Image 1 (cartoon, rainbow, N blue to C red):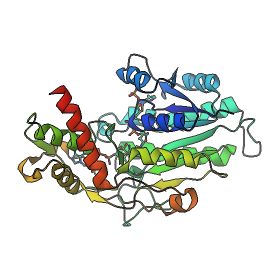
Image 2 (image 1 turned 90 degrees about the vertical axis):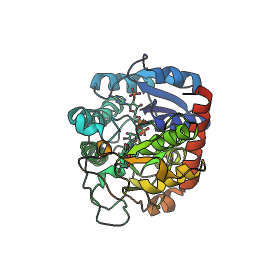
Image 3 (image 1 turned 90 degrees about the horizontal axis):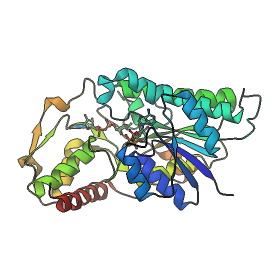
Image 4 (image 1 turned 135 degrees about the horizontal axis):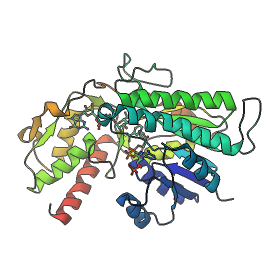
Length: 333
Ligand code: NAP
Ligand code: G4F
């Protein structure tokens, strides 16, 4: 029988890759969108015409219940969030509502529709739930690598909201016997990454500088280190987690860490330029509190899921720069 998936955050980077992956696996894919006016919805219809659109908002409980009732999914992937960390200081309350409370609302929608009442009763239909947890929850780390047992010390309102989403998912699993899991994903990027995130900001700027459309790149904390992987690899891990016999949480990352400085050097090297000639330090892009080091210990995902990332950091950055070069060569601005 054809499996049915409901994806929140379908217009985002991961939603896009996951929809593509699940369609390839033969799924019927439904994407929750807030409004049809969003240009990304039209773009999604053009690029992934087989995705069925369902209306709903993580701020609105009734709309989520209706969406789950309408779609009757086998699997729900909750990728919707306010995901840009700096915005979470400017809009802390709405971040808590969407990124944190939105998880509770989605779990409630599943609980109500599937009739789960307590851990002693088995829900009439097992809708499997994936929560997009984040390595931002680790925050101020004291260990060189982070795994499923590393304590959380979030450094942003976003990280705090994600920690709530993580624990409420665990709680619904334990309280109601739901198949609800969290993937604690480290940073993952692609040519489809939003332009506000540092990798894409860099790849766009390098392409534009190479084409003579821009003459500098202004950045904040260049010492911050991240475990950067390719988004296309990470959506496979999300799917794998929902195919297991038991619901468990997993850390997903490459196990390698690089600084923003290294990212910039690789990106400029890809077009034969020296980064020192173009990069300007700008306090505007520094955060009230930053996460200085993230590096995954993905042993559990490797051993239990058999998941491995396929793309290296250098290849990822080079591909992003090449994609932006093609984009800006075509548009000329
Ligand atoms: P993204 O590109 O920023 O996409 C976010 C999605 O959330 C968009 O589709 C957006 O829809 C949707 N959204 C925002 N507010 C909503 C609301 N009120 N109701 C329903 N949907 C709403 O994020 P991403 O990079 O694909 O990440 C996917 C998920 O993984 C997010 O939860 C993120 O926090 C988490 N995560 C990402 C990474 C990473 O490195 N990419 C790492 C760890 C965890 P609109 O188009 O309508 O705005
Ligand atoms: O690319 P970023 O904005 O990603 P950040 O904050 O790590 O968050 C991303 O990854 C999380 C997983 O760990 C996700 F949960 C989250 O939703 C998002 O996808 O910043 C990366 C680093 C930071 O330390 C930042 O201070 O780059 C540093 N940075 C330096 N200059 C900059 C800039 N970041 C941005 N966005 N812009 C700059 O100009």
